[in-house]
Image 1 (cartoon, rainbow, N blue to C red):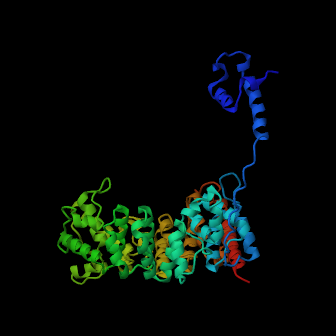
Image 2: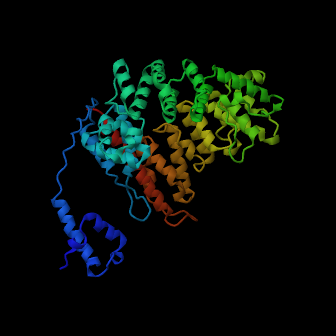
Image 3: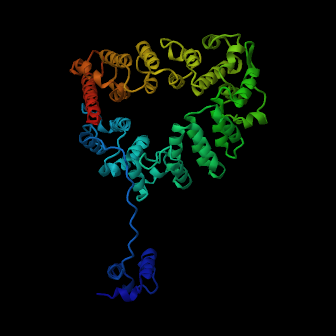
Length: 526
């Protein structure tokens, strides 16, 4: 055997030869063969491992902080382990089968656990963090359940570093909002995620105290942090926040300025709202619409973005921003005391598309100002064709307007919409309804699904609504669905196998509703 260690005297030479290639080493010959290189690597690897001196042990981490919240009951803990295992129904053919999809039930389990004030079982915190890493939609609730122990583990594992950047600080680690010393210490010394959570906690307890806390470090915060902290002021927003927000209009960050302007426009009595109302009223009158001719310095300071997106004209873009930020109360006097419905129904000169721009801006203003009367006027009757609403060019805007209505009224409106137009246009609208769906809405959805089945509709086109029903129908409706689970023959002109698919889908829906009912029972404290 060759003596490879004589040819390759040290580890660095060995690595260099491997990178360069044995046939390019000086001298060539047998000593430079690939076999000699591998022999040398084996010898040096043994030497390096045998001669390695153990490093000094790192300091032990501090113990995980105590989480005072109660653990869920044993049955609920076992259910959480089952859901985190990620078992998904399916038979490998693309069809989901009749078995509930457990991964889709995890968000509901987390939401129910949060309502009961539970913490995660200690042994399941790593799996919970892994689930939150894989699914961003789970993060707020998963991190809240993981609490202080989740943050403690996240500091020890780079794979979970996202938890330290999120807004959920963990209920077990935050001081009481009534503990000034604890609040001040964490605000000055805590991680960003902890500070965001702390600001939200204090804001919920006493909005003015949260604002005072933010003001103590505002000038030294990074721009991206200022933006996140400013966004926390949406909760409990009031006229008392106006001086701070008005000052933020001069912030060096454009995003911070824009957010401050948006928050001020949601305060109808603010000075910014008054300035925007004056500008908007100068553009819109019973005689017609005359958009602004320029975007001046005052408009820029008040959050108007000068450059429009591609495909939008400048003047229409500026007009929309002014009307959106003006308080909706200013239009009644402008139009002779008319109410929102009458104002929206007024004809607007169609030239240059000002009517569409005006109505779209009113929609955004109603959403921003949470104005239910204006939302009702802009929504129109649910039985009207989806594209015929007085001020709603898209279902996405209708969905946003619906969110400003009381829960019951929202569900009734969507139920009537489904009865008039079916389910094909209703998916976005269903997404803003409170879960579990009210009885009238749930029955409208089930009836529409049954009608689609009887009509021989292509079943896979309703899979999205069916999945939504599995998550949102009231579990008490399971018994009323039994008749729909029976297999039937395909209707004439239906897709082959459609009846079997519909039967399978209704079986899965029924089984999922029953499993959801069991989950809620398991989470109930004993």
